[in-house]
Length: 146
Image (cartoon, rainbow, N blue to C red; front, side, top):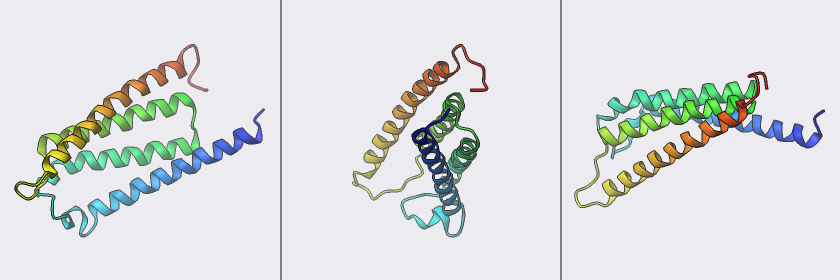
């Protein structure tokens, strides 16, 4: 039996999933539409080398969040988190490798950007461990129906 509080939390979670999917869809459109990423003066043409992974990350986020709207069991949310975090980590690593940014000479922005990328990579690695633990806990001694 579910209580009204549990039902309210479920509605709020599902609304969050819809909002997250919508935000990813808007980002996907803004990046790939016209003028898209090219309007940003600090990005170089090398962005096209990273764009497939960025797009995959956004599409994975859309797909996973739409699946959560239908079913948001603990094991499924953890598995989806592994997928989206893994793809996001790959995109961050590619951004680090390609570094498609062009900042003014002597500007602190290359260093700031590298530090932020490192923080994102480190955070994603921690996130993968957290999602693995969550998945293991959610599936320990249970079937995949719950």
